[in-house]
Amino acid sequence: MLATQLIKVLGDYQLFGQPLDELANIDTLINDSRQAQTNSCFIAIKGENFDGHQAIEAVVAQGTQLLIVEKWEDAWLKLEASFILVPSTYRAQAILANQFYGEPTTKMNVVAVTGTNGKTTTSSIISDLLNVLGHKTGLIGTIHYKVDQTYYPAVNTTPNALRLQELFSEMVEVGVKDAIIEASSHALALGRLWYTDVDCAIFTNITREHLDFHKTMEAYTYAKSLLFAQLGQKFNDGKPRLAILNADDDHSPIMAQATGANIVTYSLSDSKATAYMTEFHSGVGTIDFKFVYHQTEYAVQLPMLGEYNISNYLAAFLCLVTFYQFEPEAVVNATTSFKGVSGRMQAINRGQNFTAIVDFAHTPDAIEHVLKELTRKKKQRLIVLFGHSGGNRDSQARPEIGDILFEYADYIVFTADNPRFEPVAKICRELIQNHTEKPYTIIEDRKEAIQHAVQEAKVDDIILFAGKGGESYQVIGNENVPYNEAETVTATIDDLLNKD
Image (tube, rainbow, N blue to C red; front, side, top):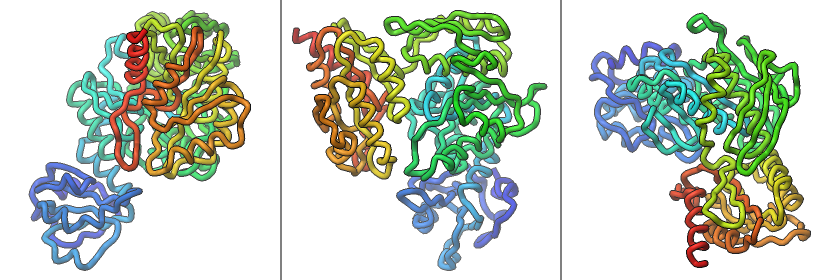
């Protein structure tokens, strides 16, 4: 793409250095100085740990001739390059990425799911059922990034605008017509979804999380509402934009107020909702329930645990019947092929005489919901393995989480989650506080902690391995160490059974 064609979409900018028409075609758009090369355009982003403006001279030395900056130094004039000075490189990045990749989301259906809990499960159900119903899908979220049958590791729940538009472009190239994404509060607050043309937005719930970043629940809620404010007003293929809201959450009116889109709702009890549950039974590793949509009752079984997963299913169901306009019977029939979501109330059964569950629950609300569910099902003890992310995360949530753990668990194994540079022992102390009413131990190495929990289990106990879910790494120091909770638990149980 010509530099002049790329830059023309920017409104407020100043040009320094070489004229744009003297530059060669721009072949790559980058924000990582380590990827600098000839014919690339470098966008200098100020991140948490590094400011791209510090790498300007190094980037030019690698052959880059077009640079987007939000601060200026006269010394750069000696460099043989063109500089575009803008008020915000974050905003420019979103605009330029959309331009460079040919506005990819205008060529697909885009469904975005936001909320504290349930994003991964809801988006996975939509993607999986669309696959069963004959659609190629792209999926962007916590577990991985999927482009049809190609998978990439997830760095963030929602990647930066440059990577996001690149993924959308790749989806278009391979014939994907439907992209389902998790929209995190960080992504919404930082503008990572700017110029992503969302057609259907889903709200699951809001409970305390990420206050290290947002500072207040009001700011956190506002960030979530941005997804609905950005839905827009225009029809797409004769259909209005759609907002799907959880009628059981007190924050849904804020999302409704933020958008001019068409609204449908779901509930576990409210018969005024568009779809609502009427009956619920929990089996061994399954939930059976009935719900009503348009005065007709449907029966569904999911290979998951937790009443809250019925909420996630109802949100996905409404997306498929209201936005995609599938017949309800077709969606319910497709559900019989659904295998569950990795790391979301995932049962690990290797023939052991106790129950092992891997789940991502890491917020106070999510932990309490999971522990309440498992308490109802337990025959003997409920053993919980838990850690908490360290390093500039919401440490003020730890006392509340600890209170919940000591209320419901019979034995607790405290360990590492993503400690970063924070001492694991400190994190555990802040979870434990002054509690002494239940037995517990601290084992900092997570794999060793899992071994201990498995060895500790007796007949008919339940072990909940909480916090990691389907994440593919542990953050230790500044390194993402490859890690898979389900595989680790499976191997540990196999070792125990082989010894017996």
